Image: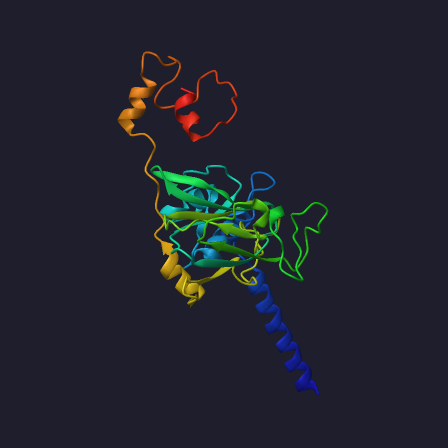
Amino acid sequence: MIKRTILNAALGVVIMSMTLWVLAVDSFTLANRSRTGHVERDGDVPSGAIIRTDERYNRDSLFYGPRGWDYWNLLQNPQPYQDPNLWPDKRPTYFFGQLVMPAGSSLTIHGRFPYARYFKFNFYKFERSTFVAVPGAALAGYDIEPDPGSGNPFKVGADRQVKNRNFTIDVLAEEPPMNPAERPKNTIYVGRDEKQLMAGFRIYVSDKGYDGAGWGPADTPSFDGPGTTCEGKLADSTRLSNEEVVKRFGRPMGSAPPPLTVDQWYKLVDSKENDPSLTPATAPARRDGQFELFWGMKYSLVGAS
């Protein structure tokens, strides 16, 4: 009995020592940990969650990402496609990809509504040396019908915390119906011209406690799968898996050429007929700026000058 008591006491001392060793984290590590959860203002994604978002979703996919200000400026080695050169706002997380769909083919995207303030899916087509929005090829979160048994948290009055939140989007390489009312729900038409396309998800201000995409938790390494998966079908009814879709439809993520060369920009801004308060370094901004309506990229680059 005495030996057992001594043994139990010794075991207790060992367990307590191990517990104290685990809890005894040096001040340097604690300081670094505190920064991973720090945000400058409500709505920002903590740096630790930014790293997790990159680790979770930056893999072989039809949609490259995550892309945005935080990923480009805070990750140690961001990829070129993570540069938010077209979307410099700080809060969103984007997933964009370039693809070409053979005439008559289809793409089916399975996804989950993110825990976020706003969500949208867009398609653009390469025309006139840049990517322009495809008419009728955009779906805001509240316009997407959820799968049977799921809910859409973006509809007015909906439960924003609904657990089952799956959706399916069909993309058809066909011409759209003449009558918009004949378009099926969650269906996008991109035409049969086989031009290069850009498509992607915009996710604005993920909920507190979630990663930048709003698909997984911010402070734990585990989560319940990727935000989106794809499957495809060719015109001859050949079915494609997610990996085959990436291989057959996907194209390397690049950038559209600038609408003006450097020389054209200087010539435009330095013109004697131009506002003398504009400079090539700051145009179209002025020292004493005035708010104007946004009429499009062409007006922003040329008309405002």
